[in-house]
Length: 71
Image (cartoon, rainbow, N blue to C red; front, side):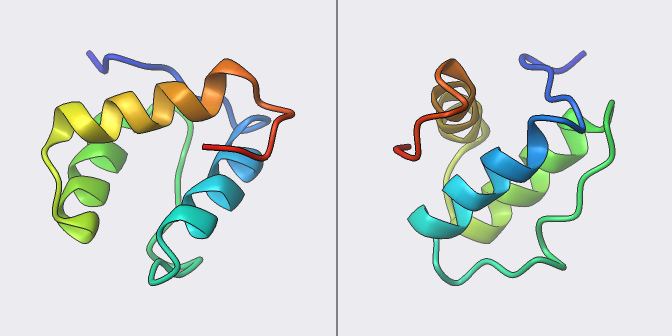
C-alpha cells in the first residue's frame, strides 16, 4: 500500500509542479494511473536519483496545497 494517494483529478497539478522542479522529466515519464502510486514512486525515485522516502515527501508537499504552484 502506497504512503500517499493521488487522484486523477489532482495528478495534472502535481505533474506541473514536478516538471517545474525537475525540468528533465517528460510527459511520457510522468504517465500515471490512479491507484498505481507505488509504481509512480519507484519510477520517480529512479528518474530523479533520490530515495523513495524523498519522493513521497515531495509528492505529499505537492498535494498539501494543490492550488499553490510551489513545491
